[in-house]
Length: 62
Image 1: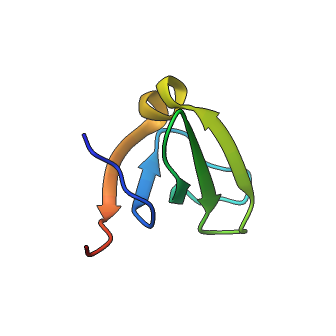
Image 2: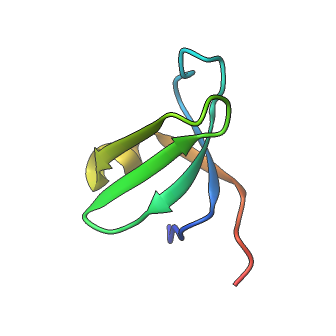
Image 3: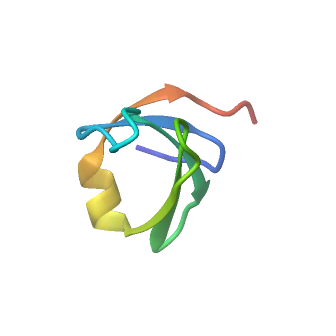
């Protein structure tokens, strides 16, 4: 599946703030995700990010 910067994705686990929605802010070897609930940012290796993402909630318009 192709991911783009600005896509809103749902993850398997809930963030401590209670949100499951994340915005992709960087795509490449690593994924940078920003929590839509509290704004916390994390940097994950691509294989781990692909494993935790379950679906795209809102795709950014190109």
